[in-house]
Length: 364
Image 1 (cartoon, rainbow, N blue to C red):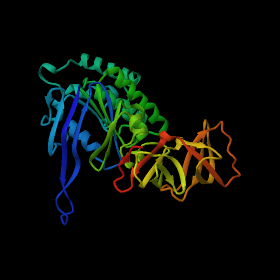
Image 2 (tube, rainbow, N blue to C red; image 1 turned 180 degrees about the horizontal axis):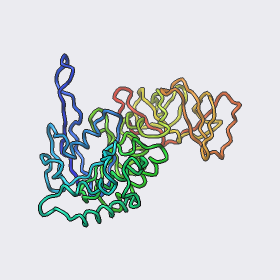
Image 3 (cartoon, rainbow, N blue to C red; image 1 turned 60 degrees about the horizontal axis):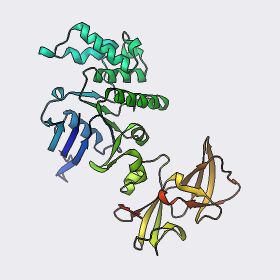
Image 4 (cartoon, helix red, strand yellow; image 1 turned 60 degrees about the vertical axis):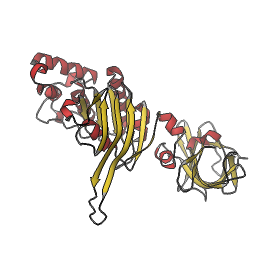
């Protein structure tokens, strides 16, 4: 099911009566979500991603704009008539009901010609449980399940109605790190098997990038960038997106463009032949550094951290906006830990420069 958001806006009255006016939770959101894709809504707390999901679900009404499911305008339809499956952060399972009863609960509310027999409901519940691999737990209560198993029950309950659109609101936040990894892979598998259009809200950029077909990065209610995860990572439109995506985060330096060269302090680290002379922010991804004793970028060595297949060199630079500069190199490369200074060359495609005032990307 294709989902189209057309100038979608949600505003609330400002609680500070002295200031007055309105606060924009979601501002002029335009996006067409292709049928059968998994889209990640990504951003920090308060950026408007959950509000956007609630607008799509019908739990809240927009101030202006339209929401389309396929060719149907669902802007004013109540949630129960939109054909959605919704999974909350806290699972919202009924503690007194078994797994089977929790999964069949949405089916019991069907009326008229959509009403199902108990046998058909149980069959559908078992089918949904098998999809999320909890069919052996059907007679247990939620208190007898692990966090990951409870999450799977919530997903099965959302899928049992065969929704046109599946909405997931921070579904992995309550799980530990290893279980988050496993469950996000399961969500991707289930989405691909069912082919249901899925919108996944998270503040975890690694989570969104690993399973999404496309990501939407938001800030203060407004969309910053939409694209395939790797494209957004490699080609951020502004400094906010560059800093938000990436683990470890991008290294940011105060620098300048002068005479067609990019400078960090007095070190010319790259070319910018088509950019006028100006002060800029310079972003370099951790994997963009090459350990080079004759390299142009000088840093002060702090420590070396071995992380299995990679080595992380932690250093400082007076022009760095970060407390430290983190550079990731292969563990095959030997690092002289006795040195107090370290020099790097920089991969040209890993250098991003941004306007010093607007923080918008300047393409080299």
